Image 1 (tube, one colour):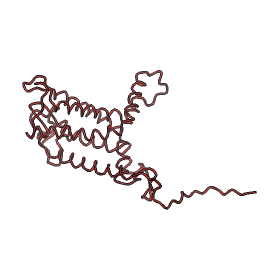
Image 2 (cartoon, one colour; image 1 turned 90 degrees about the vertical axis):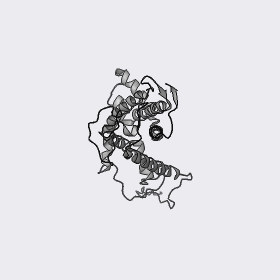
Image 3 (cartoon, one colour; image 1 turned 45 degrees about the horizontal axis):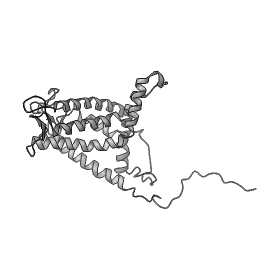
Image 4 (cartoon, one colour; image 1 turned 30 degrees about the horizontal axis):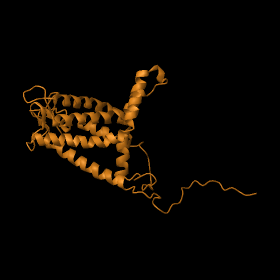
Length: 267
């Protein structure tokens, strides 16, 4: 009679760091380069305090929306200036940018991206974990990741403000209706931001979670289906909106600074 050895509790002994043959380093490297460049650009622009408003066409940079400081130039404060003049290290849009940053920082897609890119925890699937311990997201500060659903609610409200800004951008030279290239860029940015916000996992749970019977809630079931389809592209929206935010801000800055003239389609 042959004896069967008891299964071992030890992990498989693999001498190589990974058995993967593809270029798995490309994704974490891409994350580090793109995220670092974006954070640097966004920080400089948010703290610059200039070239964010084109009064002639009512273009407002998304990095300054809503502009609520007394330092805001005339016409750019759509919700009023209920904050005093702020020091240079506090952005004019002080009530929105922190929540938007926390919304993205706690996003499921971004967690995967910066965990792999900056912390190498791990760098990729099938790659040896370099850290000796893993405590998950149960301790400070990572336990704050669980607040993502609340940051989503704030981002939803701010998206409404961005939508209002885009509507105001349909402004002509004589004060009537007008459309320019800046209008289209700001509208496209808002559409993409809505795609990112509504494709969030928290949004999917809000519209369809805690239901025991979908047939009794046809409207919520339909909404859940739509959000579920968007959710499949959540990572793509997360990356695309980084580019659309920079494009919208840069275009407004160039027009506001006089470097280029807005290409007008009508009026």
